[in-house]
Structure formats: structure tokens, C-alpha cells
Image 1 (cartoon, each protein chain N blue to C red):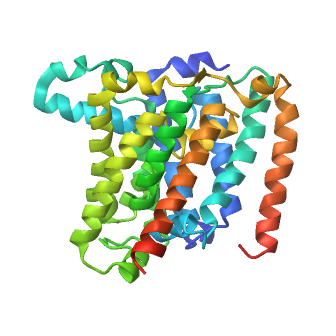
Image 2: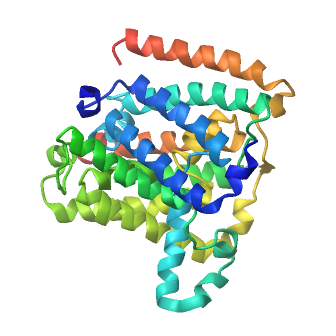
Length: 173
Length: 184
């Protein structure tokens, strides 16, 4: 079982594995692999903590009720699965600043935290605007040959590449 | 289709969790939960993310359509519009470049102990999703601009799905071989 402890697997093995996992999710659960709707549902659950049942009156939460469903459990599972993999390969480590960020920007956790928070807000907003993320559109939607998903996935990467280039090749040089 | 299993809701919650555990395990083993790998992809210096995604798409596309052909699966095509898919996609991309994780890999990054993913990315995506939910009634008009619905590429072209799957798979596999050969 040494392979379970390996630091990294070939991207092709991982990709094929995710592809096969999508067969199983269509077959056994009648659902595509996806993640970002869960964040919308969870934001509704949190709003409900503060505002009570009124929160559920928002038209968006009528469409995506703030409840725990298959995909919500999947996102929870992703945290657990990555934790297991990281523990098995001895890579689990609490850290604030990724090494590429540290080399380009610096090692102050606060700066990285603010950037990640702002990036996350923009991403969460955009994911709901586009109706999916890198898994729901980028993998599950493109493999179904959905026009919406190919357009969204291309847009993710075009804007992602331009933004990363602007930050690391223009602003920080 | 396995309708009996699909309707068993508590079993489905367990299955969702199990699917997620495997998904998270694979994402971490592929390196896709690491900020450095994702930003390397966006800076076009590390092609791990594209290799994972394209091989997942080829494998998944063939298998899911085969299951559909024998009546064991149905597609769940998301409806779209230029206003939603393109504009939303571009907004997402800006966040992708700044955050360096996506909604799935940010969860994986939390599992590997990345605190910027937990307190920054994860919390940020929750706030962004809530903002969208709050603004949704005002955004409906732009979201429907250029609406085209739940259409697939074979439907658009008016051909059998396999007439798209075969050449597309060949093209993706050729691209992957070319990427390996040129050392990407």
C-alpha cells in the first residue's frame, strides 16, 4: 500500500480517477461532481442563524434551499479525503502563506489572508453568477459537452491567467 | 437507471460523503490542492491542473455517455447564457487568480492544513455566494442576456454525441501527448 503514501501521483492517474468517480456519481447518485452550490446553501444556513426563517425568503434560497444535501456531504468529504492523503504522505502542515506567495509578496500572514478573502469573495460571487465552478462546469459540465460549461470553463481560465499574470508578472516585478 | 438507490436519501448523503473523500484524496494526490500548483498553471509554468482536468474530461465523457447509451445514466446539462456563463466565468477567473484555489480545491486545501484556504478562501467564497444571493433579484436581467438554455455541443451541431466525443477525445489525447513531449 506504499502508493497511498506517495507524495504525488501522475496527473493522468488522478484525472482518470476523477473521470471514473464521475461515472459512479452519475450511476449511483444521478448527480455530477460539483462544489460551489454548497457554498450558497451554507451561506443561507449562516444567514438563517442570524435572521431566522426570513433568510429563506430570498428568491435565490428558494431556488437553492439552505439544506444539507448530497453535494454538501461531498464538499465535507473533500476536506476529509485531502486530510487523509496529506496525513498518509506526511504532508499535513498548518501554514498561512504558500511558498510561491511568500517568494513574490512576503511571509506576512495578514496580507495573504486579506488577498485570499478578497479573491474568495470575487470567486464565490462569480461561481454563482456563472452557475458553477471548476468542478461543476470545468469537469462535469465539459464532459457532458454542455455549451454553458465550455464557455464558463474557458472564461475561468482566460480571466484567471490574465489576473495571475497581472499580479505576478506586472504588479510585483 | 438505479432509481431505488437514487431516492434513498440517507444512503445518498453517505454516498456523497464517500464520493467527496475519494475526490479530495485524488485532488490532493494530484497536487491540485496546492496554491503553488494552481497559480503555476495560471502563470503557465506548471500544467498539472490542465493535465488532471483534461484526462478527467476524456475519461468521464466516454464513460458517462456510455452509461447514458445503455440507459443507466442521464445528463444534467446546466442551462446557460452569455450573460451568465461568460460574465460569471470571467468574474470567477479574477477570483481564481487572486485566491489561487477554486471552491473544490479550497476544501482540499483546508484538509491539508492551509489556513489561508480556511480563513481566507473558504470564508470569502461563503461571503461572495451570500452577496450573490442577496443581489440575485437585481441581476436576473443580465443573467438572462443571450440565453441559450440547456444545450450540448452535439445538439447544437445536430449530430450524434459520439460524433463529437470521438474527435474531441482524440484531440485532447493528442494535446496531452504533445504537452508531455514538449516538456510542459
